[in-house]
Structure formats: C-alpha cells, structure tokens
Length: 151
Image (cartoon, rainbow, N blue to C red; front, top):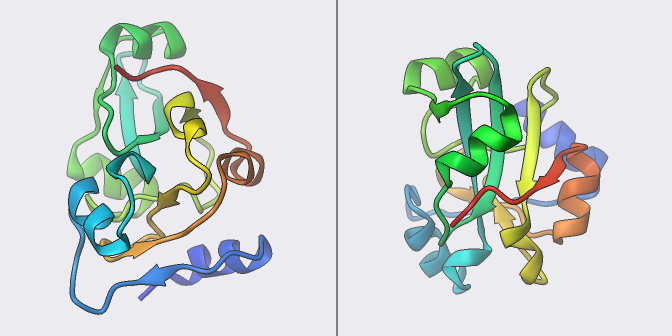
C-alpha cells in the first residue's frame, strides 16, 4: 500500500502509481521486467550520507552506478550509501521503497542519465510500485537539482 503522504503528493501533482500484485521488485532489473521497459527507465532513489553529516537523495537511471568522485564534486564531501537504519530514520523508507515523492529537508538531485527516456518510473514508497512520468515533470515537482553523478 502506498504511504498516505506519498499518495497525497502524487494526487497533488496528478500522478498515479502502478502497484504490482505479484510482490516486490527489489532491483531495477525486476522492476523493468514487470513494467516491460528498459532497465534505465527505472529511477533508483539512493540516499547518500556525506562526511559532513548531511544526507542527499539522488535519483539515477536503473542501469547506472554512482561515481564517487562526481558525488564528492556535487556535494562537497566524500559520500557513502546510507545504511538501512539511516534511510529509515531520515526518509521513513526501507531499502527498495525509497522514492522522491515526499517533502523533506534534504537536498534532492536527479541525474541526467534519466533525461534520455520519455518516461521514467521511480518507486512510490513501496517495493512493489512505480510512477510513470517524464524527466521534466520529475525534476519540476520534486524541486531537485539536475546533476551528472553516474558512470
């Protein structure tokens, strides 16, 4: 079930989540298979923690990896992936559920790797959902900064 605040966020922006009845999609590959789209269209939301103590949410194409040097250049600090405990504490999500559809005080970034697709699919706060929308809509409704953080 989509978390109430995420559903309200989606409703506010005229978006509808797709929920999979057959269980979770823990990876971009499994999500792409269920949606019958390219792996790159799956928008992975990853929480990074900087050595400066700040957290950053980056949304990248499902077939890309974060480049540590680019992450440091973007954030001004060496970063690492947040632990499951940090993820839940900061965003209220478990691994696989992370989405950019929740108001937060942390900095959000959307990687340019998603711009090549007409439609991308971030999760909707569960590990068995996706929200079809354009790259431009994703960046505009989240207020995220655009970046180049992947290899």
